Length: 122
Image 1: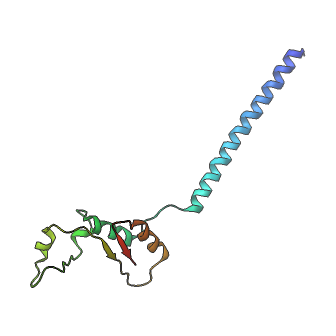
Image 2: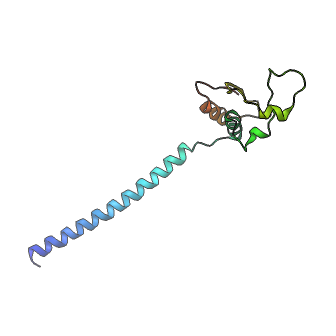
Image 3: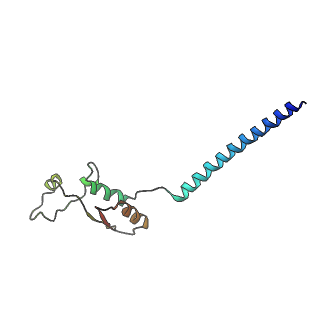
């Protein structure tokens, strides 16, 4: 072999070794990222949080149409259909009452939903 061909073959070997190392490092980094993401968890909205959010936003086609809305200002007989059609004031205070065991996850979800205009008690 000539000195230049030996140099080229060692250069080719080094470059293939670097390419293989880079591929393996990328794979390991991707696996580590997946594991860290699974350990941290994803934000999962509990059913209580979804219901409170829909009721506060008065979203059409959601629980807002099936839940009973009571207006403390209305006196006498209450027509439920009339109450649903009225313009309602923005909701500022929410008390979420759960029958049975609640969980810290539900509480934390509701606290994340709360902001300057909305106070949520659980």
